[in-house]
Length: 522
Image (cartoon, rainbow, N blue to C red; front, side, top):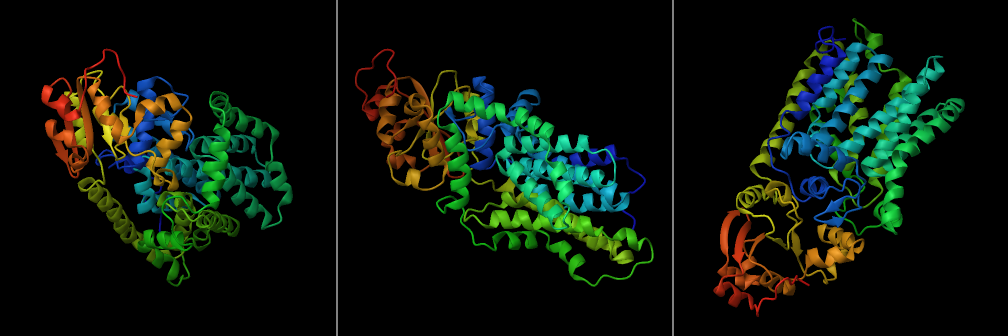
């Protein structure tokens, strides 16, 4: 078997540092993508500007699609490091790094140092894993929590069966599961439970399974996970039904949510994402002369990896709605199986770096492409607004989810969204429109102030002096008064306008009557 990369030269701490540097290498390069990155980072920015670190708000409205762990990490990073793309993606980086290092440390204990380093390299070089670590949404964070939980439970089970100390690993697994729930919900505990249960049941290890059910562990789980949910239910009646029934069970069972894909979607995605590595599994395995026994992943561990992979892929293949990030928890076990394929090829396995180079190139190329062409990002408009905006001047977003604008513009007050909120399609599809409309239900007063209909825009502008509008360049056709506004800057399809309702020509275009002191938009 080939020696693992740099075995004997680097300590675990050094490997951890290199892994973090690799995952973070290009995280700062591209703007936030809309709607997902802008939305989740925008919620974190709202925590900073409002001072409310308990209730997530999306542009000023309570946002309960997801729990708060990502927002807490991101808000803390934005506050301590600065408001730019690097800290905005720190939560995803930490999730990927924790999952990768947990995989390495667990394999080092139960398979061997060389093989663990090889598996770590294969995992870090996977394009899906690399890109997931640099995408500011909840998927990689929960994938990291799920990975850590599974491996801690497996560590506790194996240590228990070998007569070794296991309680620290077991209790830590319950805490990791609680963090997974705070990262994205019930999958943080459900998926690890399914994987470990099926693994132990498949070999009739009932006694081990029972001993993993721990009352102290359950108390730790509740101590970490429960307080936020209790606080939200007390403050917002109906929260638990919305969060668990609507956002968990209905999303899983129904077809009205976004990105509907066929049942074979994830197997194809994983096959394409690991294409440079698949020959290591498909090629004949040769008899080795240098450490053949160590090249083999122990049968029990291999069974765990396959069960882990199949459970995650099968679970997320059931719902009609499928997004790429959902299947990220399947990448670590797949990387371990690929690493075994490399290790079992013996001397031929030394050419694994070719696959690694191709994979790394694909990941880097994807980042460069997204840097050159970032869908719907309004970073340039946000920076232009930041340089010109004065405190107290309202900002209106016209019919598009410019969720990254408050961060880039450093807005201290949420913008107002202008859309036909009475249209039936707003609540029919699982889009950003429905998210904001759902959020408004939890705070009807702020909803009336922040979610405006097109007919309310001109009267709202008439109430003040300078206001700013961001929308598609074609918005002037729907809002003719923009002809009297100054187009400050454009970026791709979006434009930033400055309008001063104090100018007579503007007031005439808006149809303003006599201004009333202290009045507010309805």
